[in-house]
Image 1 (tube, rainbow, N blue to C red):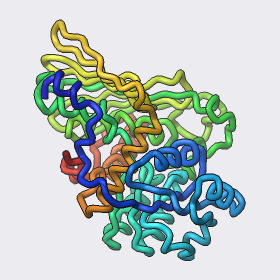
Image 2: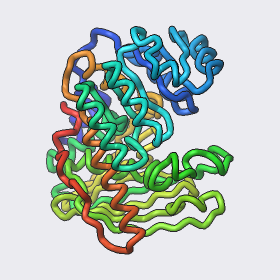
Image 3: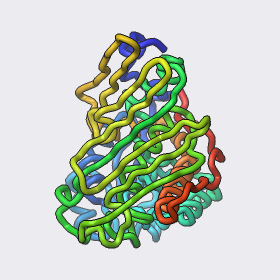
Image 4: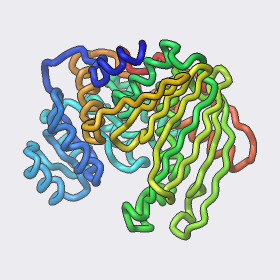
Length: 372
């Protein structure tokens, strides 16, 4: 693909296989992301509708169901007991990390497709159980990597595959945000290791450059080195208020990343090749912009209307497209499990001060990427 072709078909849904049908969704966990981002994205989608909302609070579930035209508002216990099971076809799991498993297991029991937020769970063992539950029940399971349907990311992948930047030689990624300014509560779940998992910055933010680099380059990590530290009192229970890590991708390509929940908001991913480079900046929190450099060429590809909600709309419609047609879902659960193994290795590398081989590296391969 040349740059001109990329500009011409920038926002094309090259993954779409159907325009017919509707997937009715039950949304599990009604935090700000589900309410402020996921629900509007579904309302704006072509192939989805929200019919059931599930919360710990009966009042909240019913109130939001009324506000958004959903058929039912349920408690978690009612969901597990199979209430309103005929009112939805699939579930979106948007709870904190350590609760994903139980809701996916119930979806499997009810024979419902699942779109599960990343990271898949709080640790590798629980993520493996989650994936096994879906596979044993033979239900569709997608890990919610919205960057895979972001046009800037998809065009970057095509440019790499076409040889536009030559051979990739180095990747740099960063994802930082001031979480205590965004949510001024030191007792929030992202700072609770029993809920978030191995830590906070790599689990919640570092996963973006890790997975986006995997998708764009079609290469998995094989080992990890890392350093972490926590200084603020609110981060006393997690090891990675600040984290830096380097992964070796297949073919010997280094991916150098930084992530922090206590820094100026900034996101970028840069891929340097022998003949040019691509940079997504900003990259991961909406309004993704692709910058292209090759020799004297400097170009910018940007769809200014493509913000976070629209990224989620694309993700939901991709999921619905595959559920409606029975097509292969990529990224599936095993693709998400590979990132869990990588994050575990990053934390082990920081703890031991050693390079850690990533267990199961390359088991999923690049075939898990979204098909064109």
